[in-house]
Amino acid sequence: MWTMLRFLHLSAAAIWIGGQALLLLVAPAIRAETADASSLLGSIGRRFGLVSIPSLFILLGTGVAQANHLGLMKTWEVQEKMTTLGLIIVLTFAHAAIGIKVSRGEVAEGSSLRRYGRWISLVNFLLGLSALWAAASLATNH
Image 1 (cartoon, rainbow, N blue to C red):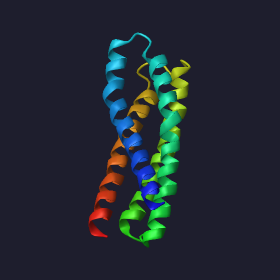
Image 2 (cartoon, rainbow, N blue to C red):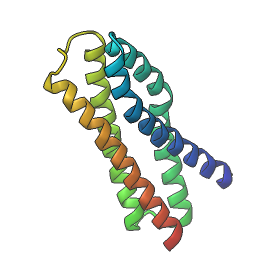
Image 3 (tube, rainbow, N blue to C red):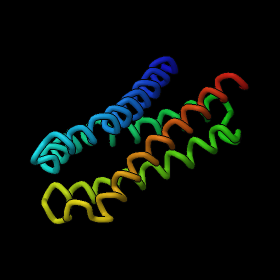
Image 4 (cartoon, rainbow, N blue to C red):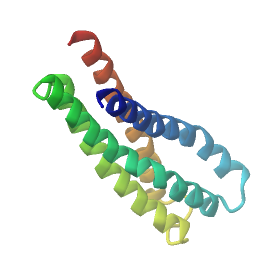
């Protein structure tokens, strides 16, 4: 059972971080090369959301279960991961709200809201890397 939980946890992390990395690399090219970039990126975002948002909750559930099982809930690494995941979830829903407005054409090109959305993506990715660092530290130190 614990091997399955660890597998689910690692798979969810790969989906989240890998998807974020891909979108950070591809979205600027789509914006530069596509006339209707907002619509295309909105479609990509909705599809990514179908797997990425559940993966965040899988990370939360499997992470708590494993940390409890191993007696690690009070370690700094687990506390950092839980805080980071909470921030990621909040930022993900904020980014989704912005993305919905952009894909509906409610936000002008070059607006500050679009820039905030791009920054949220970058911060989310960096927070995900931070959680991976904490996981690597946890695996090494405990």
